[in-house]
Image 1 (cartoon, helix red, strand yellow):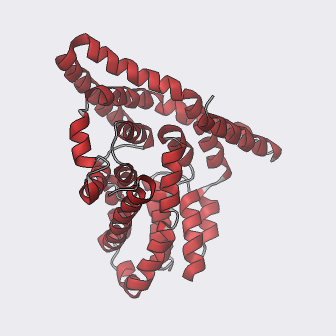
Image 2 (cartoon, rainbow over the protein chains, first blue to last red):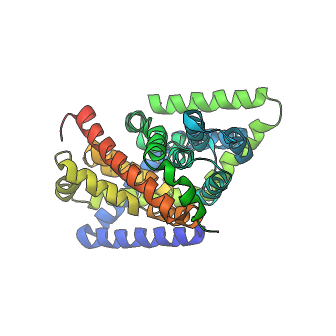
Image 3 (cartoon, rainbow over the protein chains, first blue to last red):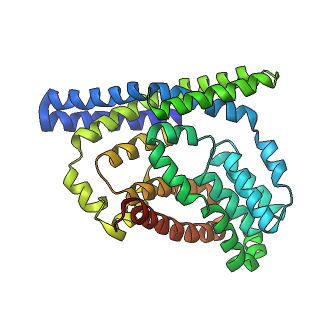
Length: 175
Length: 164
């Protein structure tokens, strides 16, 4: 999977370099390459700090710790805990979707699971240092401020409007 | 050293000091985990930043402004959200690209919509969501998320840039 990503990115780089060469010769092709490498070099202290922070957070928090926190909480307390857990749980979709499915099967409400998945997508603690480093503090803070209430509100809305369908959705979610 | 770098370095030192204070070896394990992630993604970062460099010199400002510029209104936010759902790859690839598009002058609402589209409504993640939670759950979460992300893009443009 990782090799495929590298190959695709390499293909895009070669295509863009060819396009730049076609439009402006070696000068434009060189300018694009240098601009990219210079941006990476300029951001490298920030990136190193971001990777150190992300590494330490992952050591402090394990999936087991986060899953234990969620437990069998329900109602508004369950939704808020689900948001906190979703933000803290480490790992990609192959880790957090199985956790969400386990919680749902174990009896967690629709709102709790919607809040958990939405918080993981919108507020992942491990991604924040990278967002801060790569997008800058202004953009990161504006996005966080505006999405702060989204996961709990999504959870409350899902529960309030469609909570009565929770059992039906759970029964038909497949193996 | 700018404020963002200083904040991140101070935070990294504070977390490392806390890890050392725990006396359970987590300060070394954390550094090793960070180093291992950096090592395994470094080539992706280099390629992503070269793409960013080419995007900066190749993308014509006028086309971007028309589609997702600050004056593109609701349609710009909608287009950006749609583009975000198609963005492949992890944060190492996508975030530098979005940062470049933002520096090329796309609207703040569109930038936030791009990030939220990629983070909250990724088509790649939808495949996992359907597989584990079923299409009914995915349909409920996506419908609510889509409405919220449009409103958030609108709020970003209105509150922080004063126009839509």
